[in-house]
Image (cartoon, rainbow, N blue to C red; front, top):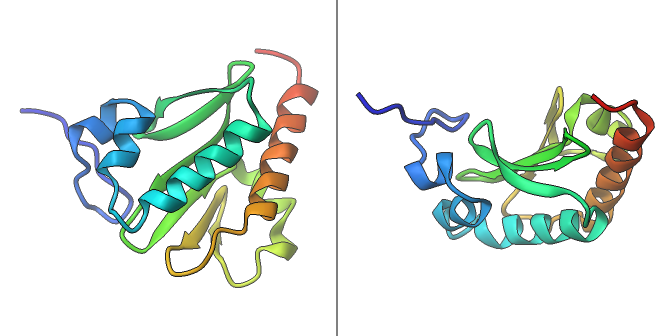
Length: 135
């Protein structure tokens, strides 16, 4: 039997999204989520041009110095951004009404992406990765 990746809402993701490239994951997302996914990806690339992208845990991931920098994924009603627990904790006072969890921020599709906040979170994660000794 073929293994299938599931999103956090229990929906089955298509195989290319689960195992393919970041481009394939974004192409496999809902049409409503794609623009925000593209915008989020562009910000991460701009802030951390030295980071590499791949699929990890079934979602687009940027790695830096052999560590996960951030992950993101599109869902039916939001884009999930996963900057680790420290990335959420440091900015918790600025996250306002956004749904959050340990290491998770949800950006609703019916609101603009808070680009300045995303940029600062990624910058913080880059500093954090470089501050910790290598693996």
